[in-house]
Image (cartoon, rainbow, N blue to C red; front, side, top):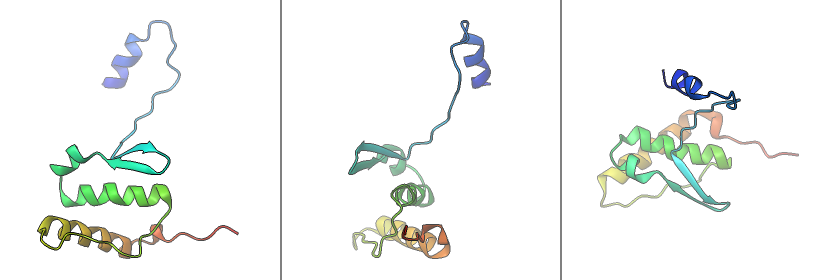
Length: 98
């Protein structure tokens, strides 16, 4: 429905392509990013873990340690979810390029 509205509004035929982009991670510069924390704070642990895992995929890294605040059950649950997904999916195992 939204795409049809955009197409109808393009009176001069200048739109060549429409892309949908989901941004859980907001790049700030080449070595710094921010999670879209406002949205993540109100989301489920699974959604937050997905955002963190998307950073790992983007940077092609697999962390050797996952740290969390001991006094926070929420961070413990998030760390557990991230660790579980890392362990259960080999997509995070990257080969060194020759």
